[in-house]
Length: 124
Image (cartoon, rainbow, N blue to C red; front, top):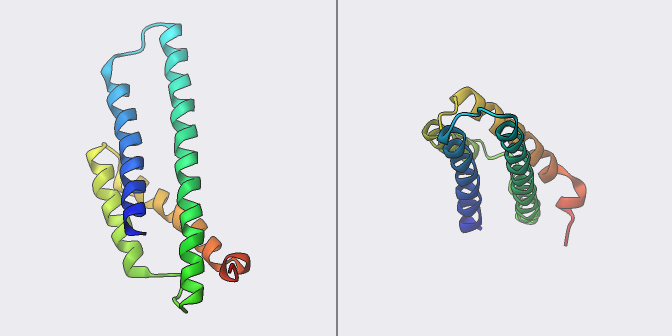
């Protein structure tokens, strides 16, 4: 399970890094370049959504495990670790810690909803 989380974090970091590297590679001077850049953003957005969807599927598995083992959905120390690591990665990508914290809070809020979902908690 830990390796899946690491792979997920690496995937998101790679996507963000790829985006930043290509965004800085050359200025947009023509309408065609502008349209291509927008198409690239659309593609990256799609990849991000798919990655978040994969993350949420893993959250459901974790929620089931926690329910079966009487572990509370909210693990504050673990969440702090996740946010701190995300901020470190975000800093390397030129992203503000405030943005990263807001993003991770939004993802975590949704994850807690899934973990508290009775359908997840009683999944056998």
